[in-house]
Amino acid sequence: MLDFLIAFVDDHLRLGLTGDEAQHLDEQMRHVREALPRIRSYSAIIMDRITPELAGREWYTLRCPDCLKWALLAEGGEVRCLFCEARWEAEAFVLPYAVEVLEHSWRDYRKTGPPTEDCPERGAHALIDEAYLAAAPEDARQYCFGCSTEFQGLESCMRCTRLSQPADGPTICNDCLGDLG
Ligand SMILES: [Zn+2]
Ligand SMILES: [Zn+2]
Ligand SMILES: [Zn+2]
Image (cartoon, rainbow, N blue to C red; front, side, top):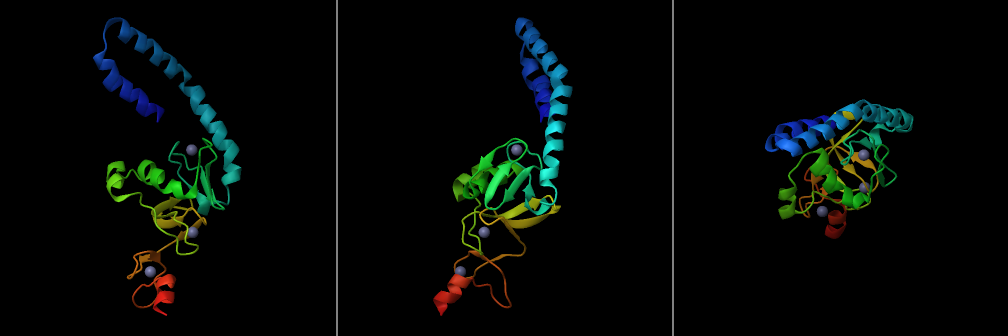
């Protein structure tokens, strides 16, 4: 992130400046570059401190939308980052995860609404169709931040479109099954 910022300043901001402004920016950037090793080691110190706390919780650990570290714990219905200490309500977490971590377009969601689904277990409106857990960082899972459960292969109910565990034959959720009597 810092490397990106520095490159951005060099490539974009610096080019438009001349004279005193350019000199001032160069001075500021020199301070930033000097501070980099300290900032990096600070980050390593925090990671060292939180690594034992994350150990064994790989199925509840995701990347944080704020700091992008694999330090976000979604456990017991709580969503909090051990690295940057950001916290979210389970239901409000899906959108920042999709936009910042999955890099989906914010604009698309303004039209369609956040990509938040109902959980087939307890009904919390806090499930995302695509999430990556530290235990299997390459495999997309479906994850409910309300009950901190990961799912695989949920399909839309053919009657109400809510995600549901597929059975043999057409997928129908338990609620709809109940309605149909
Ligand atoms: Zn964070
Ligand atoms: Zn759930
Ligand atoms: Zn249904």
